[in-house]
Amino acid sequence: MARAELLRDDSRGMMTLDENGLGHPATGEARYANFFEVGYNAFEFLLEFGQSYANEKSRLHTRVVMSPSYAKELLRVLTESVQDYEKDFGTIKAE
Image 1 (tube, rainbow, N blue to C red):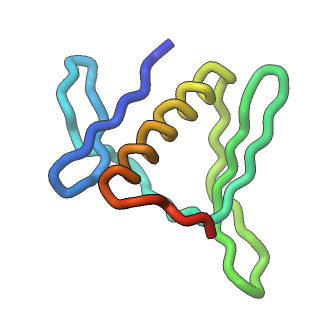
Image 2 (image 1 turned 30 degrees about the horizontal axis):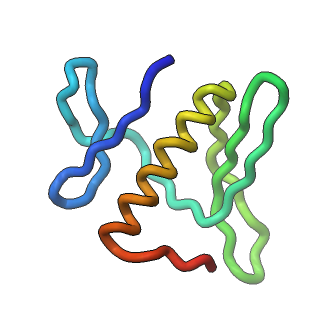
């Protein structure tokens, strides 16, 4: 299984590791999401992201499908990143 890793540069932007372990800025389209749904079946996890605002219907704009093993790795990396964030900036308050 490929291993997901994140690095931070001085501006706190995300960077990815290439095959030689060298960092480069993350590329691709960025979409803001304040709404998400998660589903699963025996073979895959589905993560849907979108935007939701008061008095408007929520709009999904991105769907990511991954195997259970990659979903577990995503959970590990996200948990580690949230812990690091809270060390740097304090506890995140639930909305």
